[in-house]
Amino acid sequence: MKDSAMTTATETPAAPLQRKPADKVNIVLFSGVTGGTIIGLPTYAYFYDYSLVDWVMFAILYVITGLGITVGYHRLLAHRSFTCPNWVKGVLLIAGGWALQNSGLKWASDHIRHHARCDQEEDPYNAQLGFWHSHCGWLLRSDPHKDPKYATKLKQDPVVMWQHRYYIPIVLSGLALPFVVGFVNEGWIGGLGCFMLAGLGRTFFVLNSTFCINSICHLWGTQPHGQSDSSRDSWWVSLITFGEGYHNYHHMYQSDYRNGSKWYNFDPSKWFIYSLSRLGLASSLRRLS
Image 1 (cartoon, rainbow, N blue to C red):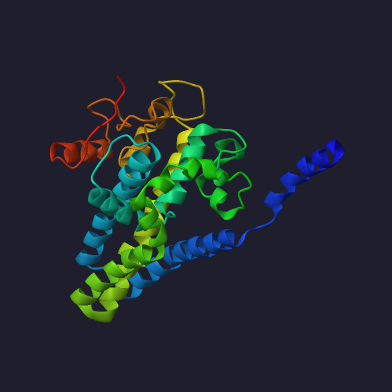
Image 2 (tube, rainbow, N blue to C red; image 1 turned 90 degrees about the vertical axis):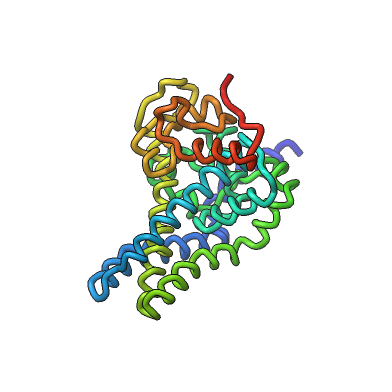
């Protein structure tokens, strides 16, 4: 019996060699978004160019979806750094769903595991495996270390489960919105242009800005708050991620609703959460004592 158990244990690591269907779906999705952005955006610009409405929609949706990830998925779901009414949570999770980064259930459970097993084999975006893996390569590989325990509390939240069930329609609505706005403004060509820039292009840039937190902020930067893991502060990453670049502070004080703890740190996510609290739409804001 012991020999059999030992044989099974040694054979288990072979699992990562097998790609699961979900990985193929991710490959298709990210290839489509990347290809559509790199090839489609300049091609459309050459023939038609983008209107002011397209650029305004790009900026608006970049902010909405970025905050959906940083405030909704990250600080609310993964770290429970504040509480809010269910309808506010629902709005934040819709915005996060528009960023095409999986449902809040999947995103937050992976992130909780990242903090619990940072820099270890079970870390989903382990920076010890290099820039490519931690940036986006981890999404394209099967994950033998998935553990349902990291999603236990999340599954008890009815709003989280609602968003998980309707994730695909939420994603599609986020892509349809810019097309509709462009169509109303300039017809079919306008709809295509707004979809290309504020739909595909915006998704590509939000994805990669978020990925920078997992890669750049674990490889380069300063560690003024602690060296127990590879997390690093990178102020310039905060400029494109609504304050998430102060990553060393975040890893040392995970439940703090702020990533940039100083008043002058560029952290729009903390300002947004604080503003919600002043409006009576958020409470129990957690911060380092």
